[in-house]
Image 1 (cartoon, rainbow, N blue to C red):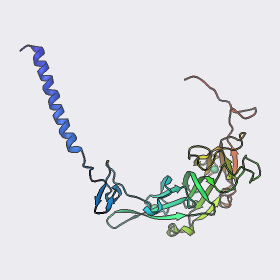
Image 2 (cartoon, protein in one colour):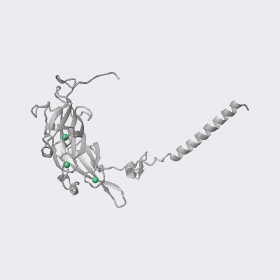
Image 3 (cartoon, rainbow, N blue to C red):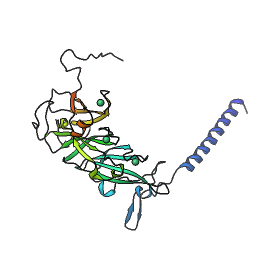
Image 4 (tube, rainbow, N blue to C red):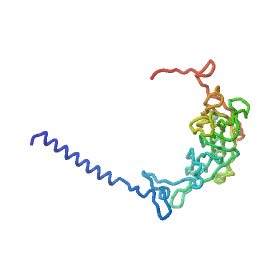
Length: 286
Ligand SMILES: [Ca+2]
Ligand SMILES: [Ca+2]
Ligand SMILES: [Ca+2]
């Protein structure tokens, strides 16, 4: 047998062995997911009944199943009650726009969540953002939800009188919930104090049917933008007033003004639309 034929046979044997080993490993690693959705009698059980998924993760439903008709839009993990266990906050397209899910542990370490729904005085159709931080600097976590569409009328342009807008447009606002002084009352809905950011009652384009990523308020970020020690809010806004910029900065004068809802709103200058002298921006090809 010549050399090239021996090499060919050797390579075929190597490939065959590798294929057998790979097939064996794949078969051994493949899970049986046939029972993820099972029917017992007249009861159909989905994967939430067993917790099994087609992955390495086990699933549990955090919010009560009876509450999930509106569908959560945003969720954030934060320790709300200071017990060292991460809790969850979710935002929903409904007039009770915020749910807090407090993590509890059994003696054996099993995780469950105690859900509390936070309502407000504003009718809510859809939400566009969620943030959790200590806005009023009292050491307790607070919640801000960016509401894309309320049933209230806001201002069409910055600095204009409110209400002055078209009822068919998005009517947004930032709604805040201040955490209770006593951590033991975190699971008491009435212990959370709600307050709207007055200057955020603003109109955007399109109506309530617009998706969250389009028209009116579309997203929100939080940080100490002016470095004065308190948290500020930045939102993206597709305004009804075509001359208004689309990114707004909300700053405050400290705890008292935050609690009253008195925030100062400032547009972030658009270098393509502002009058001279404008911030410069160089456009260069990559
Ligand atoms: Ca906690
Ligand atoms: Ca606080
Ligand atoms: Ca600040």
